Amino acid sequence: MIEAKLQQALASSPDAKTIYIAYSGGLDSTALLLSAVRSLQTLKPTQSFCAIHVHHGLSSHADAWAEHCQAVCAEYQIPCIVERVQLDLKGKSLEQAAREARYAVFKRHVGTDDILLLAHHLDDQIETVLMRLIRETDSSLLAAIPHSRPMGLGHLVRPFLDLRRKDLEQYVQDQGVSWVEDASNQDLSITRNRIRHQVLPRLLAQSDSYVDDLVLLSKGHTRVNGSALRLAQAVLKHMHITNYANDHGISLTNLNLLAKREQTFLLRWWFISLGLAQPSERIFSRIWTEVLPAKSGSTPELMWGSIRLVRCFDALFIMDESSHSLNLQCGDDQSEIDFDLLNDQTIELRSWDEQSKRDRFGGRRKSEWAKRLFLTPWRKESAVFVFKEGQELGIFDVKRKVFIAKF
Image (cartoon, rainbow, N blue to C red; front, side, top):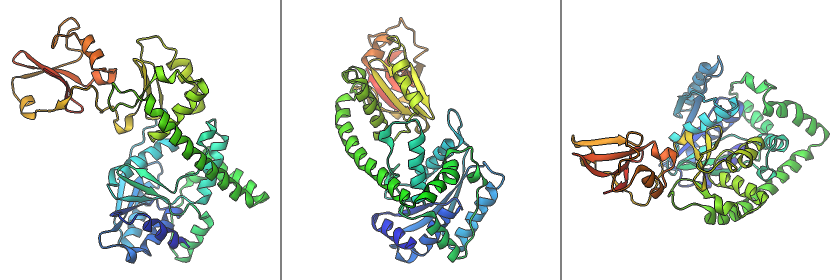
């Protein structure tokens, strides 16, 4: 049954080249690795398995866990990548920071036509539904963990979502393979652990049917959410601002045509369509109390985790600073960098702040260029004025390496 689920997942991605396995060394990922070993003979000549172990450095046993994973992989002749990460805890829980660090590692390795296998199972699915039920969040987000989804250049696949944890445990025990136990999984200060060890056992003690009920609930929300997302994407096409090219922004003028309830719905789905983490209900409500009512000309912003929401001009912009999504296009008058030109010894670059407010450049002052090119504050940080022997050449974006205005 375990191996059949993996075979089914692999059959759904026949073009996958490298099949990465998220391998923590715990029970679930050990079951995934062992089922992959049993599937080696079914791979195409162009396909291969590779394990990825993320070393968070949070436990005194972290080095031993990494060594365990490497030893198991060596025994079964599966390559094992061990990546050490440093967690960014600014504005995040430890669990969230660790998750973001893991997925950043996964995205670096998973290339085009690659897939990443994760060992989430039905118990994880149920725990997630219960967590979303008790959290202060929009009910439209109460959906099942997806079996697969795009991730970076490749795809993420969860072959065991229909299996119970006890099935995976029996499978690993039958093969006589050991796994690591993370003591933090017993820490009841973590919401998921309280649900796992206190809430869920009491529910199941009353009736096993609660498992099916919760799964049906989440799947129903998944179907509804699929329809809602398609509708939201159709509306968002008319909300997107066009003056700022690939910056992720929506027009406040258009957004304000909707009632607050519809605005709330649309913003939630805007974040989902971009694959961004949702803010808590408390942070989300501050959009209407702090961001939208702010004085004209100001640039109020909200942060949750690495996500930054900014009001600038007549638009709301959102960006994930962990993926450097600030480095996008702006303006309509851009052209490719001329490396020979910029490497010329006679070229002079002046930052936006170095250029005088009064001086004209290309016939316009800085403020006029900012309006003409729709330069947001984060764009100005990377904009420089280019001179050659005193002659004005243009305005250059040093992050994207393109001219955004050329004379």
